[in-house]
Image: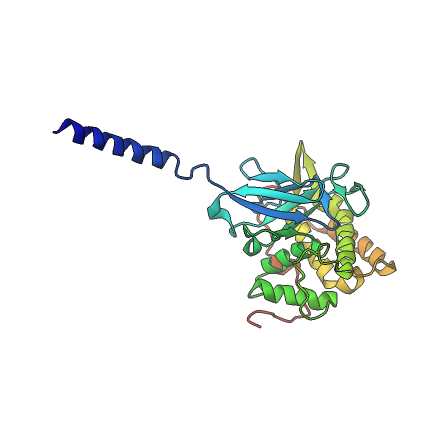
Length: 270
């Protein structure tokens, strides 16, 4: 074989091998967003690939900056495949509404189908958390249907985007409702969260029961008054009575947690 042809073939082969070795094994998609009830600084954000509501060693994670912003770098194939969660940690995460650390830990999330690589998207809040849990019921045929159901429950004007950054658009009514939801969630964390070394363990059944109760009592949640105080106490009693779900045990279907809490109305296909 001609020496020059052989040399050219060798160079082509090396180029192909080099191209294969650098073709994307380290390529990730940047998922930018913010976390709030008020913007939350030093909150841990992660892709929950196994649905256990806690950060595991193989899951990509990030920490929010002083403005509650994060960039989560994930495998492009995982975009829209798994939900994104945010952990506000007692004594460490700062709520910009108060400028102080949160006094109770709680977990927020957003539905997997809403995760995108777009800027000004991926806003994680009590509202997005409620939408995620509503979608887990299988009762809603699409995220927009769940969003509309939550909008109605909140009494927000037609056209209100309940997944939007209510801080950025200055929606004070939704911001206030989100603050109250976060307060309830934090108040119930002793019932739904525990620590195992440095790992936060979440009882998903109790968590889902909590979110179902918040949804069904949204009229009381919107205004921080005696009714919300009573709801906090009732939730504590109810969740404490639920059998604890150990690690690795099957999780109750979300529709069970929401049973009787959607007024018997199916939104599927509407």
